[in-house]
Length: 396
Image (tube, rainbow, N blue to C red):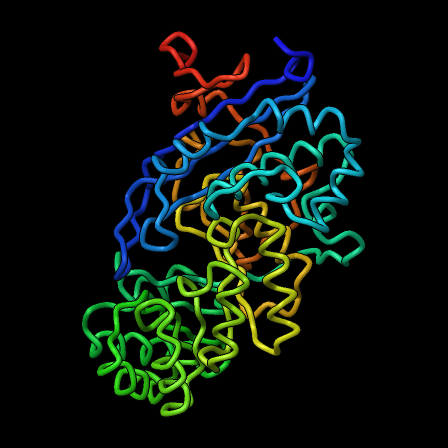
């Protein structure tokens, strides 16, 4: 084994945790998680990263990302980690990004998976939190309020009775505009004018229906519409904004900073949804936030449904240093997964009495993998190659 690979290993987990409560919206219905978790171990320290591929968002799947990962020369990655001082490597990552620093090309979720694992490892090496790794010196809040999402698996009355307090409400659109209008009306009648209310259509509207739908929802009290049309429908989005005066937040249409620039150039949006996996990692997500600020548009810090750990703490690290975010989704692993199934410790917590989250305490993402994760292990890397895990390796 080459010296550069000595003391280094990797383990990949394909995690499909059963969800205690399902989550339905126009683009997908989910009853299990779908994440890849990567553990990189170097000289006794381990960094843990995560991605959550969604075919309808970036075109990637857990299978396609796994195959792409197998083609990444991890021996060279570990050699760079070993031979470059951690502080110097972190400076290069901040300046040039993950792909240029490590010479790795790939889709957003592959880069996210590798970058989050590497950043977590560097965090442990330097004793720095995830937020300090990305935005050094930025003030960190003691807590940040999170939004509540009303999906199609729960009725409006139950949602209003059980999910408060409400700082920002996102409603997943149905295939019935009358139902959606009734939902927004019920929210406004109960909560009044204060909290913003956004309807997320998940690309399900058409250019013909978008303007009348948006007008009806605006009359009911909606503040924003998220991703109403097929992705990157720049001209139709501009028409929608001009015809209705409703604010538009883009999600699936903005996977890269180039997408954001195109949306701004076409006057197609008022805000963007920043999600660490969708946008290619923590560093790219931070750059997208900085671009949104410079372009004078808003941003939400969102999550993929059913993230399992590192991604949740990654997005929270941004949120706790971004007081100008329109909304923060915060992750719901406490609601989605039983404590027995949770694969990381400590489990990302939410103060449900106030619907707020606080900073994680520790270096990197401040998490460690638990024995429960081994159920989902399916590849390990040693001696410059990937190998399937064996039943002995994954047994409790």
